[in-house]
Image (cartoon, rainbow, N blue to C red; front, side, top):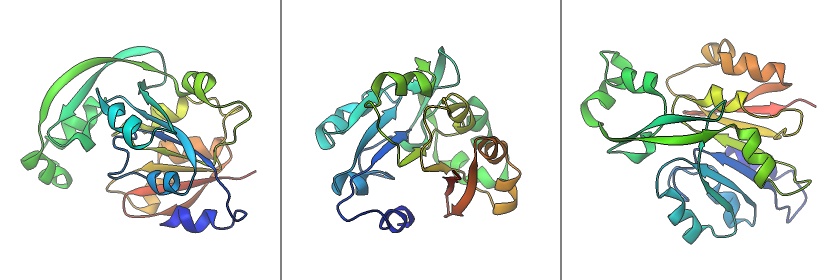
Length: 208
């Protein structure tokens, strides 16, 4: 795991802090569970109804919040799929999944929306103002919100909250597309640099 290699440079026994936006599940597909087992702690955020019951059971020492994040306080339609990992607020992404776009053909044939629910959302800055422990540095922030990643980023207060690393799920992309994306342009303005890419995750590092 790339992050574990990065943080091996920290002092022995170091226990950091993470933010997981779109945490989904305490173990499955989690970018933070490894660190929880190592003694790190953090804030897990997910809008899926009932999602935090399992977090509270399996990761009781984290701060677990069942809430939606967007760039302003508003109510949004939350789409729930037969594969919960695909749940999210992005209607545009859902339309792509069920369009004739060749890159989404597997989604079109396998996945379907099984329910919709209107959910209250809040800016990330408001959530961190309320729940982030006082004077706590954020070692990394993981964002996986199925098409609303840019809105989550723009809802943060970058003067106050500067994670050392940011992980964002970006599917079906390559480095040239990433470097030309709105996400990369925005994070560059906030003094972040493109650091690495795995199959589905892009890493940015704060360039202090």
